[in-house]
Amino acid sequence: MPQITSQAAAGAGLDWPDADAVSGRPEDRRERKKQRTRDSLIDAAMGLFAAKGYDGTTVREITDAVDVSERTFFRYFASKEDLVLSFVRDGLTAFAEALMARPAEEDPLTAARNAFGDSLRLRAGAEPAPSYLSVVELIESTPVLVAAYLRYVHDHDDELAQILAQREGIDPATDRRPQVLAAVIGALVFLANRDWRDGDDQSPEAMAAAFDAYAGEVVAALTGPWTAP
Image 1 (cartoon, rainbow, N blue to C red):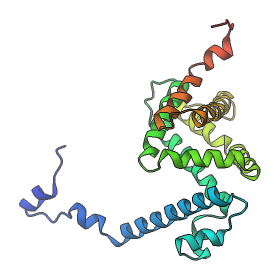
Image 2 (image 1 turned 90 degrees about the vertical axis):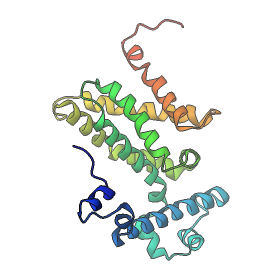
Image 3 (image 1 turned 180 degrees about the vertical axis):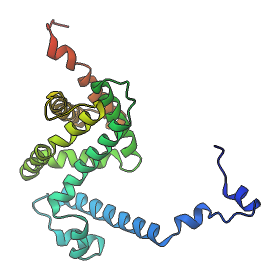
Image 4 (image 1 turned 120 degrees about the vertical axis):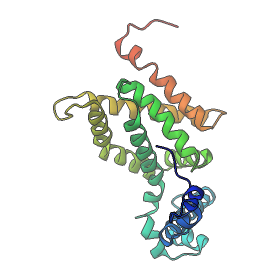
């Protein structure tokens, strides 16, 4: 179906709102303001964590840096820990959406490899790579955050398995393969994060390449036999 532009609609005498009018709707402005506030809280928190340490930073200091109330902070995050883990949640959501969008003819591992790259490229447009890197370093250097991260991953293991099962049309209650692959994907992300963090190239493409390199060894590692390269 051909696209009807606002100019063409106006020429035909149709009442068609233009993009500027739509983007200026009160609800759109409210959402943009909420997103700016959330981003400002995250930026302020990460700057303070870097300067004073996670344990040495209070919620009050974060809100003072943004000039908002503590009540406003708690509208967005349950705690400092929740703020840091929001990066993990956003990453899992982006990966899940990308995985469901992959072509049905791709096998599960291939779909996961491609979806990981897709989700990184999508997030790169909204979140600079150094921010993600700083979160990885913060979590790994803060025992309470390591524990929170592991708890979060454990509590959400089933979500990825459910998505894999849905995509492949199988029942995860009777088929163990989705749980196995979900666990493998979690391990691949951990390994890729480590290599990417320690490397010279901190671009999203380098992170995707690290994940893909490890994913490419899964079949050989599981089936063997192993031979020296």
